[in-house]
Length: 66
Image (cartoon, rainbow, N blue to C red):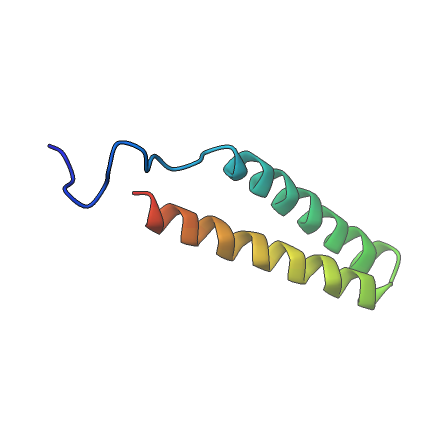
C-alpha cells in the first residue's frame, strides 16, 4: 500500500547507516581501550560520547524511515 505522505523522490538515503554502525563500533572499542587499558579517562569519555551520538542517530534514522 502506498503511503500518501511520501513522494516518489523521497526515498531514504541508506548510505549513512553503515558508516554510523562502523563509527559506533570503532568508538565503543576506543572507549574501552582508552578508559580501561590505558587509563586515559578524558579521551575515553570523548569516544563514549561519540558512540552515544551514533546510537542516537541510528535510532532517529530507524524511526524516521520505518
